[in-house]
Length: 293
Image 1 (cartoon, rainbow, N blue to C red):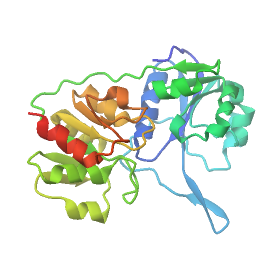
Image 2 (image 1 turned 90 degrees about the vertical axis):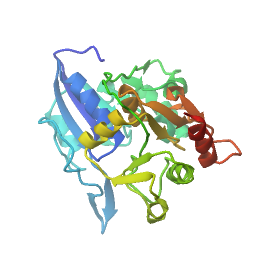
Image 3 (image 1 turned 45 degrees about the vertical axis):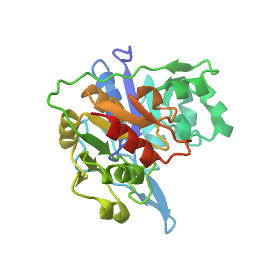
């Protein structure tokens, strides 16, 4: 994946239960095969009563490597002054942080470009390297000489007797979803197609669940992988998608992908719904699934 050996590396990434945490874990697993890697998860903070407090605690379900270090928001400068690394791999690096400025020549940034303020896109030229996870990101940053296309692969799994549809909502906020949750559930209400839904749902969406839709809530990774293996399709009609790890994972388990034409994921789909169409997303999904045998 990354051709580095016998280097001292720091990986700065996510801790909360999201696809981006598991994306970072793939990087950790690969880099740590031949290198000494320390993983520092970024923990979200918010200002409360003039103090920064943790916004999201790490999930008990996450199996973190032994090398993980948890730092408070004011400990980064001291940590990087005390510990010297050959390379720093950092997701969505904040150029306003002091530790970043001091180590800029060592940082390989892995951006989620659709969340970037495009008025500040020239900031990326300061990094040692940029790893682009999809064509959308690469095309947005390719004018920088430090930009490199990265091919992400997951080893295929052998699954049999696959059937039904799976909607794996990665959002941690049930009241706001960029995944088009309402449309997915609405599309299945008037069909006999079986849909499995995981993650967090709003009270409104919970009230719509009927007999052909099974809602399992927040599941462990092992359970999610079991559902990948038993499902024939993954539904992912996202309004916005940083990387879409769930699509790569589902494809590795042999699932067909029904997704939106959002730029970061449209190349991964077997069946596509249009975000700009006059036809509602729910109707587009309904037409696709009812025409499939």
